[in-house]
Length: 543
Image (tube, rainbow, N blue to C red; front, side, top):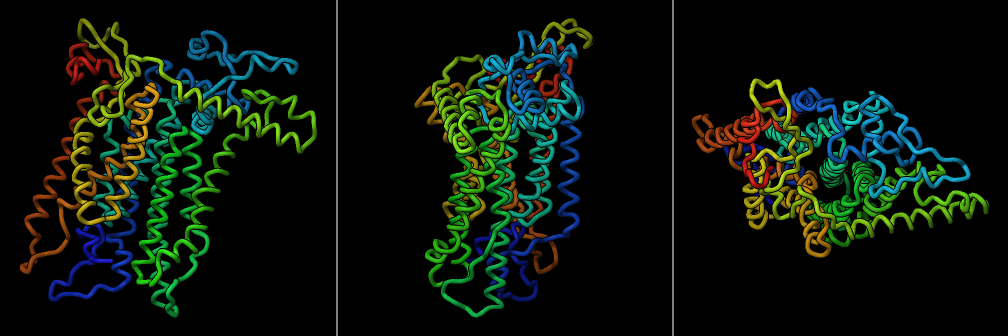
């Protein structure tokens, strides 16, 4: 591996000797050392995550309403916690919930279970997570939003840590976490009981696991190179627990929304390509054949079998109870254990097919629907909540809104960074640029198929899995702007580093100001109508 694979100091390039040129060791070339304090590598990201968590948990129960699609997922989560499956609810269930009445489900008998079964079109894990918050804090807005706020906060920590590992810089890791904490769309979805924030979390967690697995694999290969007799094939690496962890996370991502399968396919291919590169980097004579023989079977366990098992495990409630939609419990239990399994699997597959055909034919018009090409430009946000007849803000007309929109400074900066990253990858084949572009593409490009092939109803918040990778693109470009941490002969830092740090700091400041300015319409703060209106940047599209 050429040293140019690590083009700036903050990415982990071994620091040059100030008095003479230095020959880099094979270990430094294959697995660059982590710079800085281990303690600060945790303390810094934790502090950023606490900052983001305070923003997300403060006033979490406001508005005291069932917001947008919370009308589905809050009740489904509560049903799963109590019954193991989603059940149908009575008329005006939302009003009953807000009045403190949780007796909201249809009644049924053992002889007639049909009224209980609710036809739902997403797998259960995200709703189980929402239900966990309701179990802890009650069936109220804080309870059903708790899990989203917790997951949103933890995702800031995960992003900061994975950015630190990819750049070998604690400062850049904290920069990435800080930007995610300030993104408006991530903020809103972290305070709303929708499924997409959970999908984003499990995708990001899987990516982080694979980045750690990449480092661990290279460390083991270098250990073998330095201590064992050399061979043209290299060692068998045994169980790779971080890759298995990634498989669990990807299975869970699909268990929130089926769109997680795009990331599963892409990340599996990416991980195998990293295996090829790792064996090539230590100088094996037949790296690709060896990787095919030793690493691909390992990948099949971690990134095929494991996600399948994780996905099926989240359906335990449906298999174990009689009231799930399409369960056919009487038929399954009437013919012995073997046919119980056969009939149960057959019913489950039929149900999955019904859900697939639903999504293929979902063309219902919605005032806030948007096309995927418009998502990076924030042309059509989603109004999760709006009340324009409020009083008490000190003006004649007051408004209260929750607008699902990204922070423009971050999103537009991210768009520029992604363009730069394409050029970077084409010129250098840097693995980090490739990984970020692949992950961003998997969160965006598949939706174009649905837009053109089936005219499917889509919304801006479907883009939330793209956001961490957009921020990683900004972070990588920030590292390039700052440049390597090498000093000139007189001991001073290069001007590039000074000016680059100033530019990156200015961008972070602008992101903070932009988020602060938008915050009232992200958090349902009561403000004068004129202040609400001025925050609708594209008036005809944001309203």
